[in-house]
Amino acid sequence: MPSPDKTIENCVQMLQHIMDDGTIPRNIRRVADESRQILMTQSKGTGLRAAEAISKIDEISNDPNMPVHARTRIWELVSQLETIPLD
Image (cartoon, rainbow, N blue to C red; front, side, top):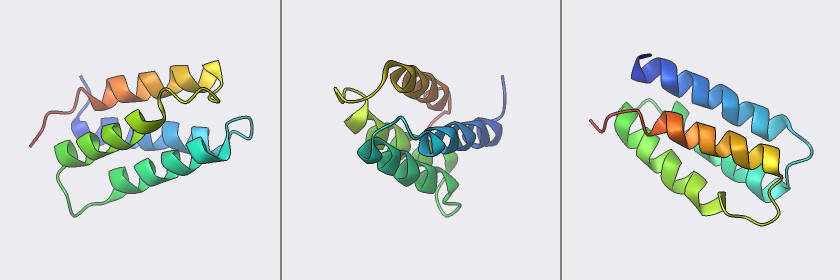
């Protein structure tokens, strides 16, 4: 099992791919950017950052405008973030 820091790093990369995908609606890319910023904030513990990002991502996870491939990425991302223990 990868370390929490490695998991955060992988999730940041996944969010970057979502942000760079022009087929994904702008509001979803905006939330992906906000979640990426949360994960990159070093002033908080990894568990807290993961929980905040999950909360933010959960807001858009059921957006009817989200393409199926993006929804699959979001679910995979949340699954990875849920493996990070709360500090």
